[in-house]
Length: 223
Image 1 (cartoon, rainbow, N blue to C red):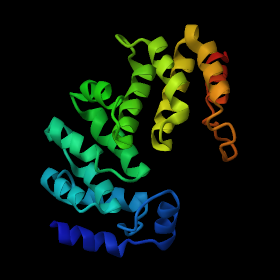
Image 2: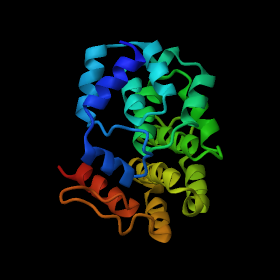
Image 3: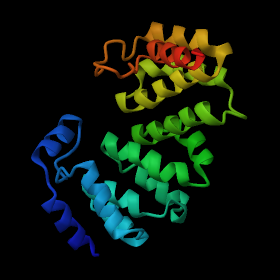
């Protein structure tokens, strides 16, 4: 398929409610408002097509970018490609799919993690902290949770909301997975109060770090 053909397909799948939802969440008007399930179905139809994925990304269209990440080959992307991509993101859903489908599959992700955690670009910083949260949850060897907590305590209150989200996830993962640092992680969360009043659907866990940490630890400790 060509870019023109894919955009035509996406336009046919447009959903006004989805578009309105995306705009409410901060998306631009450069989108059709395609449901996630429809994007995945179209990706399954196209299969892997790295060049098409790159071309779709260049359109800047939100739906096209989401689709692009499902058909790209992450390991075929250079460091420059990834740096350019992350700094061109302008919507959280695209950022989160980028972290999940592109970064996590890239062999140089640790290099990006260390660089982007200090980036002045909010989307690069969001990705850097997302990778750090992953390290805290799965493989923290070589990373000092105490030093990470130092940065969170001194910086999280003043960073962009887009960065706060993944920085907060890192805080929670440290509290959950590192018992010696749990009390401090909870204390930082209480002191900063970020997401304390975040609306949560019934049955879901609050993103407020102290509540999140205690809820997961409680489940883990049940016999």
